[in-house]
Image (cartoon, rainbow, N blue to C red; front, side):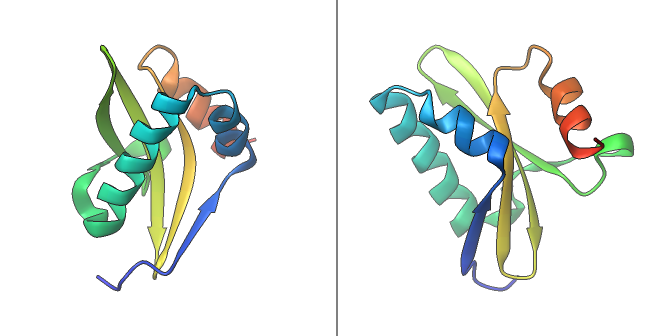
Length: 96
């Protein structure tokens, strides 16, 4: 795996991130750094979301899912959030 040289946020991801509190943003940034050091850490999805990886991390008392994809040395960040409706919304975003 090549070293990660670029991170691209989807408009949805950027909008979600702006709404976070400072400590939530810090946890998200830590999760992104973890992905950068080990891009294969997320679970690979099948079917509708083939090629997408989802990394799970703790945000306070909640489990947060972070959807991303790797192409060459670029990470594409698509979405993050709690499990409720996460995959349905992600699928809707990717296939619109």
